[in-house]
Image (cartoon, rainbow, N blue to C red; front, side):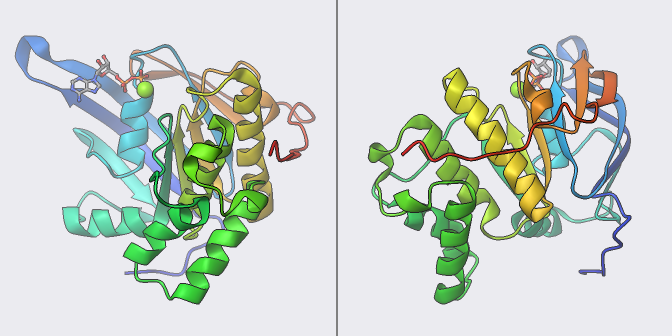
Length: 249
Ligand code: ADP
Ligand code: MG
């Protein structure tokens, strides 16, 4: 099942990806034959107006939904014949999600929230504690590990949610409007956190954002409209800033 990964193998390679919701008159083509390769270690932003298909693409890339047609290779593995159960397992081990709405369990500390998925995955307690503390440190909230969620600002809570997503060691982080519920300054800090994770761990990141300054943090931007990619471009050298993470504790 787990094959040795070639360094040159893209994390994601999709072709002709189409997703049609509904039937007959109510039919909506949310993805209209998109093709995409994402090399390992890339940080990429997906932009576009509401309804253009961004979340649908993220759900297909994240194995939360199957496309109507098209091919998807994840780490070189063709997923078209993979069972739903094997997909769920791949999703659990390889892919991390961050969403706009931040769901931390209110009665657990930041640290315990980060540990929880690894408890479900039956990871030994010493390892999961270490991974949780490392992840909290990487996203700049190591000092807040013992706070309860109601003692965190929105930006701090989203950092904890990001720590929870990356602590188990996924290959791919998918973030759908992770800054959508935050004020602009906190949102920009969160973009910096993603960049830090990308640079320090080589984590491959795909995120949806409306922030026009995302090019300071991402290496590549794809713009969508009506289920198509209308632009796909690299951010010019030098435009991407050095990530710096201050803890706004
Ligand atoms: P975005 O994230 O860019 O706002 P979405 O991927 O959510 O766009 O939606 C793309 C299109 O697909 C929209 O027209 C939306 O109404 C439609 N759509 C999304 N999810 C569903 C669904 N579960 N059932 C029917 N239509 C959907
Ligand atoms: Mg969306």
